[in-house]
Length: 279
Ligand SMILES: C[S@@+](CC[C@H](N)C(=O)[O-])C[C@H]1O[C@@H](n2cnc3c(N)ncnc32)[C@H](O)[C@@H]1O
Image (spheres, rainbow, N blue to C red):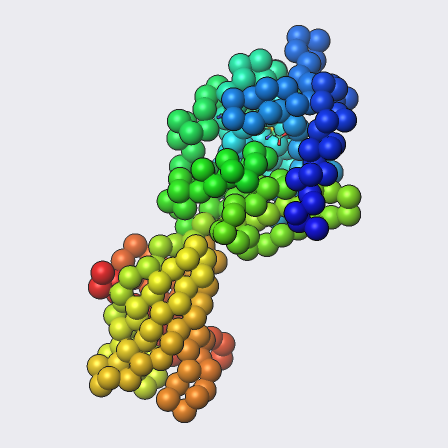
């Protein structure tokens, strides 16, 4: 099904190409679906998908939402109007930027919404807490190295297009609508950690290998015991499981910060677990 979707979209584009969209544009400028854009053409996110996208990202008034390739500015405007967020659009086409700025004025959200005329591969969007995308799988993948370095916990939602082998944390599928993909930027935990607080593992080291939000590795004790570890990250929340010498399953959930982590055994066991990065 997912394989068919780009083809369906292409067919839709061919039908719609050259058409204006009711409600998009004003007397000064009326964009048309399929018009050339620097790296991708302009196609607006349809209204029924805007709320689900912003809701999937759990946007609140505390967020800074960036729409990369913001077209007529509808997503930043909705983020401000519906959720009270601060929002920024980055758009390469100057006519769309000018239209978006007029739309911002008309919507009465100038204090919270800014439109940048620029290239998403040049402009700095590192202050975003939420990113919205409707670009294409290839462009998403080109953005991936930049996104992966953003603050852990940053939510990224994409209309229709995935990010290749970076699996989404969630997919929202609504009848007759494009799928919405959500990723949460994971903390960087790859490396070796000294761990304290695990019952029966007094002086343990934890070696972790990370592939996006998935982690696996090995727990070793000073007296030579070892156990495999498997887990995942939800932003800076790391959960991992291992089996004790007696074969009991244990789950640890910790919050990762700059050079360490702290948390406990989950759920119901009181042990406090902490870690310090060794390398
Ligand atoms: C598919 S449209 C999405 C518009 C809007 N985000 C929405 O969902 O309604 C993609 C937009 O990206 C813009 N664009 C393409 N390449 C760009 C680039 N390198 N930098 C900034 N904007 C770009 C296009 O002009 C177009 O407006």
